[in-house]
Image (cartoon, rainbow, N blue to C red; front, top):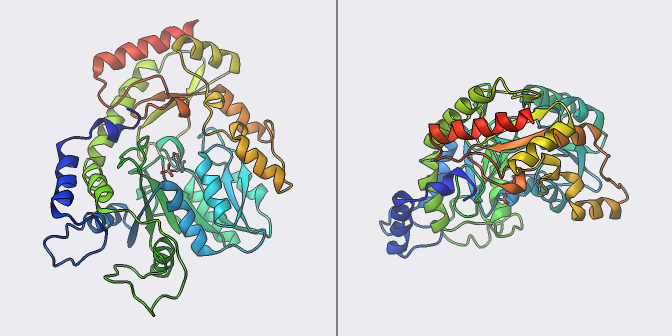
Length: 395
Ligand SMILES: Cc1ncc(COP(=O)(O)O)c(C=O)c1O
């Protein structure tokens, strides 16, 4: 079972889902005064907005659509660019591409998130937005990123897919930029199988995003609003069953995060004296979700040796999240005449070849986190894993 939320699916999720099934009302819209309408999606949106401290939340079909819709709302002109890190899931790139923009990749730093200095290097007169990705449960350097965005008049769309519930300098992730996109897939902090959430403060941006996600309709529609629709849209709606399960999971999110933080802090203390590595730099330690513990070894040889002993891989070999392993993305860049290849982002390549993701709550070999703990790990298991790790470091 991959993400911490998926380990905890239980009677609360069953109750919320049964509520919907027994009502027979599966569509996300309905009359709030009708007792047969259980309004799970509305409730989830309301509670998540309050939690994040934003005016609006819109539930969508996936994290990918949650990132794409705000970009579609901004609107791309030919050749417009969005700066995004070279270490992220392919969806960050496809959301940008399918919204009509060109992704421009920037290096990461030893926080494994986008390096603000390289954002500055990548700005051109076609840059419209930055997509910082809060990778592996921890925030980007949002002070620097917002400063750059303000200086250059850029939008900031936060990719919060791996960091639901995380914060930066006291602000919830997703509430700092113009919009934030969250994923509810099975690898995430909380899950509904699939699904997404968008956080937005600005009411005009929210209306646009809402219309794009639902055939041009305005928020909280009761009917089909014939004659009143000003834009064309698509269908990225979620239904009440997804809303019900996500709602039950959301109400467990703080408990999940507090347990992950305990496990991570115990494990970090246990391995603190082992040799030849540093913990990943955290831009905000207090706001860390705690899903993973990333260590960066002094050399690639050492990282490989430790990984071999543990039966895991360095992040550069993990497959899914590394630009150089995305043949379809490489083809795309070739086709648009901006070729990239392994070696195009040397700082990123170097860090990822020495980095190892240890699972704390997200068990995902595709993230390089096939080894480690999970949300049910007790002190005995944490000790055992720590000993195994220390032993591997001594080889
Ligand atoms: C950083 C990041 N962005 C975007 C996504 C896309 O989310 P989804 O799978 O819900 O479309 C993911 C999911 O794996 C992700 O990890």
